Amino acid sequence: MNDAGQGGGKMMGAVPGESWRVAPDRVDMTRPVPAPKPVAVKAEPQDIVVDANKSALVIVDMQNDFCTEGGWLHSRGIDVSPNCAPIAPLKNLIAGFRSADLPVIWVNWGVRKDLLNIHPSLLHAHNPGGDEVDLASPVPGTRSEVLRWGSWGAEVVDEIHPGDQDIQITKHRFSAFWDTETDAVLRNLGIKTLFIGGVNMDQCVMTTLEDASFLGYDTILVSDATATTSPDYCVQSVLYNVKLLYGFVAESEALLSGLNGSAV
Image (tube, rainbow, N blue to C red; front, side, top):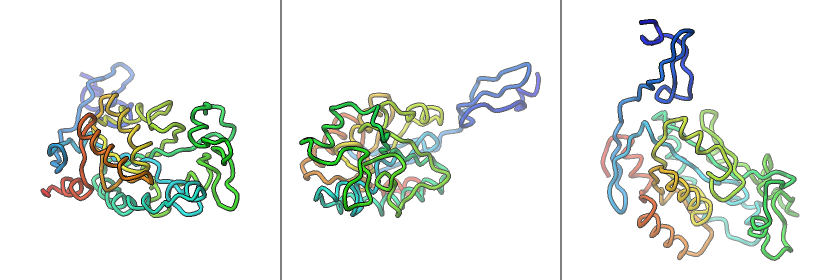
């Protein structure tokens, strides 16, 4: 047997469990999978056990335009303070996932300046009366160019800015999975279970979670790591539907306790 079968050759793939081992005369496609690392998490409607080696933290849209005074929502007279509530829980989760060497994946709006891939119904959703500032346009009196890629408004809030080791994905729809590389990245990492937080809970977070569920991922909404500026009945609807149809709901402390090997 040549050294490709004994560990020789070049690894080709994102992670060992999703890689080939390639030598000039042999390709080993067996993809040795790391042993499961069970993590117990208190959740609703049932407690869950997940494999940490197949889990990732997905953070949706914690951007200045949604969370910071001087951003787009604030310019429309919307109180953005509710969207700041996930910052502290997310900060702790990010540290916990990084410490455990588990993926942290950021998916954020970043539209083209020319809007060539944005259709009229999506423009209308952001400018329903036709008399407000459009996507990618400057907001007078603020630092925001509405969710334009590379602008201050599209940047993640300073308190939890992505680290160099994290994975960043740009989206241009409410769901992180529509017309993006999100699904390909997760599958190449061997991820099966997603812990999801961010804003807005009833919009981009919920559509991302729904699409993830439709694609076969295990989905857990981290309730205190997500928020919305919408009325409370929207929050209650999301929590109800996630527990009924799409997955599970857990709190950040329960997840961190699980990662640390203790029960809540």
